[in-house]
Amino acid sequence: MAFSARTPDVPIAQINVTPLVDVLLVMLVIVMITAPVVTHKLKLDLPQPRSETTQIAEPVHLSIQADGSMVWNDTPIDASALSAQFALTARQKDAPRIVLDPADGVSYQVVASVVASARQQGVDKLDFMGGR
Image (cartoon, rainbow, N blue to C red; front, side, top):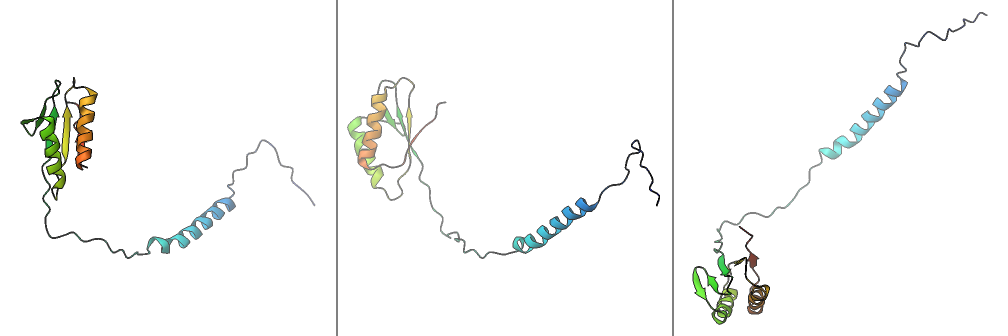
């Protein structure tokens, strides 16, 4: 028996395809298992839109000036009338949002008392206007 001696300076020019075939078969099995899951249909009972149109009330703009005076939709208003206006607004069926716009120099106490008065009267849609 004659064995040939391998010379160390000759590179091996063949690719071992066994790991490639193993990976390909594993991927094929994964695709075969997940393919029926992707085509599965799910029956959902989604809510249907109502035919009637709903009217969204215009927001009320309440601005507080730096000196503490207040304006309700371009009409000057004092603190006692403001409390009554909050009560009327809270009793409406579709109560509008109240957008509060305090001026830059107004004190925190004035804004806090307006918010507290609104909460006392039952106003739950009170927003603050961002800086301009």
